[in-house]
Image (cartoon, rainbow, N blue to C red):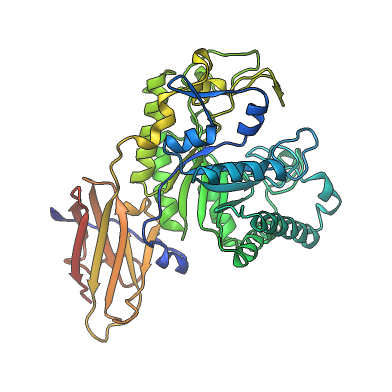
Length: 471
């Protein structure tokens, strides 16, 4: 461990985190190696066969064998155009996933069709109350609560629940709202989100399983402003921040994704999951339905090959781990080409970005076992501070490992010893860090050492240090 003193830059713009963030760093949760299998039941009905080593396999058992420990499944409200992604289909998915010992993330779209980062369309059954926020909030609550209680009665309560899917636009609106409205009506939006969240909490209170609540935004550049607005409007009771990352539609590269995750998990009392991502193993096609991820989706270091797809998933997952994220979910690894037609034509728009190569009878690609790759874990960081007896007042920690100049953690004293403060987090191993602790605003001089920034090099085992606070 090497420690050096640096000249302190101006830190007058630092913002304290919400008080809840003081308790954000609990024991490390499991890492979720996930797969969205919302299409599997339909694909099997259409004749799809999934293979490993040339042998036909049950897809759920196969994914579990490959290291998947979380299955994501979508739910539409009343999609009359398809018999899938309804409650019966969800039941089947949860039942099969649980039989294979995998956890389940249930994704409420709150729409009769695809809800995504471009559109959020109110279900037809609720259109008459679309602009009646109390009535629509009650409908959201009742529907969410009853759905979860029905599943729980059958032993199918999900482990996690998404309250909305890629909710970048305002929930339960119309297709033209992005151009005809000035922006999100946050009092309405917050009321709807909180109604869904409360329904999950209330349903979980009556169950042996209390689902974690996830809120989900598409593309990392959109996540931070959305959550800042949501938090300021009282949307705070969530456990997981889900984000979609498709380089084709994102302005941020893998560095930007990693930095975003690191900032998010230090800003909010929630864990972060890349809940959607994908990469093609070829730019060829098995059918006439156009592939959504083509040559325009490729990154320079990741060709559209077996190895390129596998390396993308391993490298992305490693970055998520180093940033302190807790999961990566692939979308949709089993939407293979079949003689059936989906919404956009016969076959699949995704067969070249699945985990199964139609040219080899839907043999699993190497990326399918990305969970079994060897990953380095983030290193623990622990700072222990001791104040003189009788010293009072707040302490703030600033560090470049928090991800941004405007993030400062307000430290809480030990419950049994008010002179003792301890902060723990994780950082990338072998990194060089800068940090300082402050007892007043503006943050122009610290209370550790000579008051300037402290620089420390983290070993592979982490970094731990104790300091006496100077006043």
